[in-house]
Length: 202
Image (cartoon, rainbow, N blue to C red; front, side, top):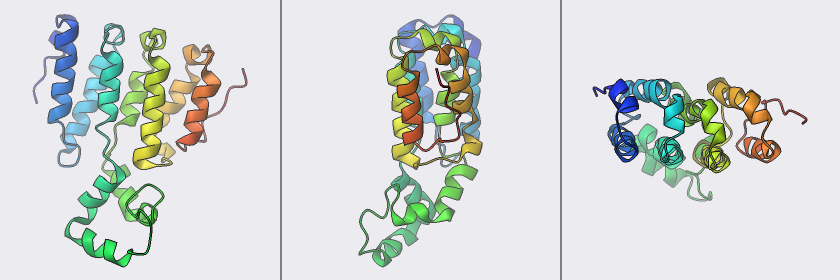
């Protein structure tokens, strides 16, 4: 996908910019195309980390849209197991919700290995985008970050911290430390399993 990043940043009106973002998302397939993971990383770096991006009305919706590209755990199970999924579920017939986070298949290392090794998630891009200084000034900053954290817990469960350094950077950001709701937001971090982030006793 060829994208004129400069044109998108500098000349697009707010409505066009938001539509372009969601157009990129709708064409991204992180299951089948590793280059789409690279594309989303580039989009984060070249667009969402720009001050003018975080000042646009639709920035919060775009971050949520980026988060929504992270597939659910059941979808990951279907992708990994394919035709073997049905027989696997028959073997687990007596277990409740085996495809959910904390279900029996969630504890199968092969599923989570695929998720992390193939980068079937986007929450790290969301966290990186929210380190944009201008993002902290938004009225919806806490709502958007809470959404990202709660969806992280819902879709992949407690996370592998080696892939989540941007959450650590986000919570160490000087503008984050100034927030009155820092403790509340940190509670969401604990809920989604990112427990090694140092809590600042403010």
